[in-house]
Amino acid sequence: MLPDQILPAAPLRVRVNDELTLDAGLVGPDKIIRPPGQPMFRQVLDYLMTKPDPAKLPSGTGIGREGVAAAAVCVRWGSYFSVLADRNKPPWSEVASPETSRISDDEMARINIEASAALAHWVDLFNADRSLYSQLVNRAVCYLPMPKKTSKPERKLTFGPLALPEIAKRAVDITGAERLARARAVVSEHPSRVFANALVNVAWRNGPIENIHAGHVAACLIDRCRVTVAEERELMKFTANRMAVGMDVCLLLRSERERHERSWPEQVLPYQLASFLLITPAEWTLTETSRDVRLPR
Image (cartoon, rainbow, N blue to C red; front, top):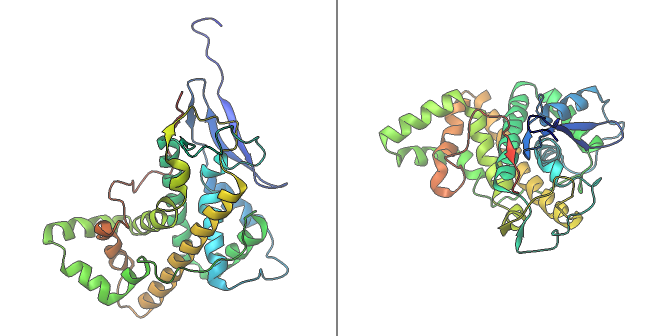
């Protein structure tokens, strides 16, 4: 190859089913993966918008389906995680090694960002059009492959109580005036993303995915599947159960807003203040929808 010759970037694709293949970006010869022009979540959502409603309502409770749908749309298929768990690729030779990290820091950052941006949009859809949201939940459960089609909310999760007015007031009362003003400025501009960052953190990042992420960094291979079937089942069960809690909170908060008690930013404010509970990561972006990934060599 001549010194000034530039190799073309290779497209990165993920097959969801017989009808949908996702554009996951471009892999350059420098081992940098550029995000797709259209976010993966939007590709999934556009697909669901074209599908008919299921002839039969999926089994399980409504909130259980909502948890599965949020996990499917925002994490399993709507983020870079789908690249790592692509069943059309042969398994990576390190997939059974507990000492090897099978997700690089850059890859984890892209998943977190994409899942949070997707969930913020999903929550906005819930708030804006409950009827369409319910249709999309049932379509997601019906048409997107998932290990489970329903979930069970974790009622003891700390995330839920922060939605209660008395707990929210306590969080505000113990916060200094300067920090409170900064937090209010953030949530007034990005309320849904603040909520999404908090929920993705407790429903995805602080869970069994850490067992796959932990370990020494190896040369991650993009043409290999790095998640076992059993691990995917555990991950999606965990995430769906906690997403169900989050969507249950959305319903609670919406009912309160309909009574004109607190605005959406004021309802989200306790989650912005909850970094001391390890719920909301203070350093997570509020504006990015994806990010480049530089694979370890």
